[in-house]
Image (tube, rainbow, N blue to C red):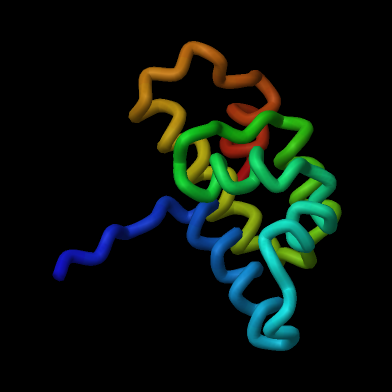
Length: 102
């Protein structure tokens, strides 16, 4: 069986969700979405790689989760890498500036 390696930002979100589920087995994706200030459907799409993250959502995630500097750097650089791989034309100046400041 082959394991898919998730990009850093998706892996980090999955780890944060798993950590909360370990502490409270009744914790759900819907609860996690509420903490992040995003709809459960949008969060599900992001975690499956079917939707990209906006600058606003990245800001909400950073303010809602206690991430260290290294985790933030990995999150941002992996997000930029995925957007570049997909040939996204909508890579914000803010994301480019945040990654280059790392």
